[in-house]
Every structure is written in structure tokens, then in C-alpha cells.
Amino acid sequence: MELLFILGIVVFHQLAAGFVWLILEAATGNLSFRKNSESDPLANQYPWKQSLAAAILLALPIVIPLFNSPHPGNYGLLLTMFFWMIVVMGLFSLYYWARFTGTRDLRNFYLAITWTLTAAAGFLLLFRVSLASPV
Image (cartoon, rainbow, N blue to C red; front, side, top):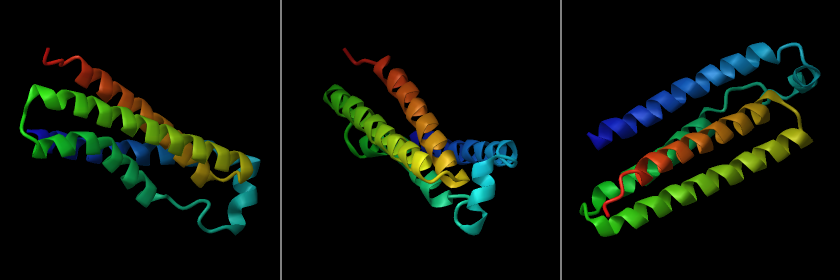
């Protein structure tokens, strides 16, 4: 059951990320930073590797406890892993927002928004896991 949940997280994250890319591509078509970045071929190319990395990072705290025995002592480890996953996603989000302010292109804008939304989804998962306290 957990493996289906993990696969669902990765698949639906990728679908949502593709949807965000399409929205940003349509909404920013006439903006000046899109016209200035036409010389760079990577600026307007979909960053599927970074998007997949975000999806895997979102699912990682759920994957690791599958190999530990289900014990109430592992609950703190699970919460800690979710916390650090949110911290890492927040740092990536800040990194891409800083890159977007320096070099304005669709790729950095998309990655900044995607990592921010993925960190928010990680926070919601942390909230869901914290409601299931074994104590």
C-alpha cells in the first residue's frame, strides 16, 4: 500500500509540475524576460531532471521507513526526515529564486515556483504524519 502511495506522489507531482510549466509558458509568453532569453536554448526547455528530483525528494521520507521495523520509536525518525526534506526543499527554492533574480528566464522561474510548491506539499505531508502520533 505504501509503495502505491509513493508512486502516486511521484506521478502526480510530475503531472502537476508539467501543468505548472504549461501555465507559466502560456502566461509569460509576452514578458520581456522570455524575449531576452531566446538566445539560450536551455532557458525555455522543460527541466524534467530537477522536477523528478523534487518528486523523489518529496517521497524519500516515506521510502526509508519501509525498510525499518514498524515501531513507535521510529516515529521521531520519520518526523525528522520530513523536517529535513522541507528544509532542503526550502533551500533549493531560495536558490532558484535568487537565480531567477539574477538571470530571468522561464526555467529558473519554473524551478523556483515548483520547489516552493513542493516544499508546501512536504509541509502538508509532515502535518499529516504528525497527526498519527503513536503516543
